[in-house]
Length: 309
Image 1 (cartoon, helix red, strand yellow):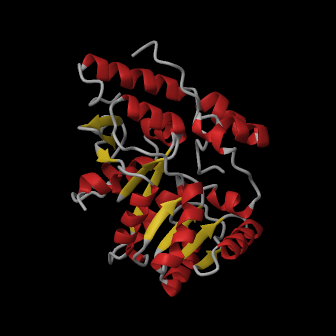
Image 2 (image 1 turned 90 degrees about the vertical axis):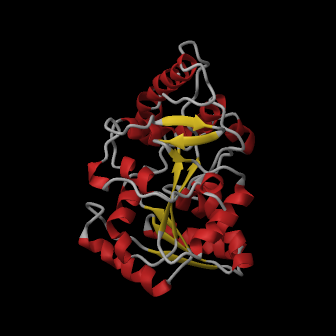
């Protein structure tokens, strides 16, 4: 499978500590010959079935891999130089989570690009685990939430080995308490790991502890554990398809999510206009990245910030 088809990088980037969003020579969002890119790194091309095949390939490697699921909140943070910049450079796989981001990249000319979310992956991966003999680990979430998520997923997929690993309170990604998680993962030796610590902590945690982690695919999944536990409900599929899942979540958790969706989220409109304008000025809307005034409004992502969920 080629890097272009899988989204896996074969070249190493500069040291993580040296990277910032503003210093990077590649645009934040772009499309090259139909392939969507974030900071010049490929976004996975293909549907969920293809992604599961790619997960299986990576899970068989002898090194740990990081998968990130890009949404509106991530893109806003990436523009501002968040620690997520390092994660997006180092990740082996990048998928599109947010519906508005999917619309924008398709508008730029991305082909065969599909929405693959952490919330969908946690259930789909557990289902697929019985066929591919995967051991699936879920790290993080409140203890009662993690317990409920594992119980629900085991009931739905009894032939898959699903293990919950509690996460202690971590002040920083490098907090020594994180070694408890590392030791538990090494003892389990899983194939797929869902990191539900919140973005960007979960991605930064992976980068810090990567030299000591067992080989597996680590997916930054934030609120996926809450959905699997049934503590939070996802919007109906029709609402998800039209990019309005964020309104559903806002109604459920207005106090917590209002700053994210109503104050921070609209900044994505500026990124959208600039990106489309850049593509138009380059004379190749399908191969540019950073867009025209007068572009149709884009609603904030339904799962905009998996991390804080």
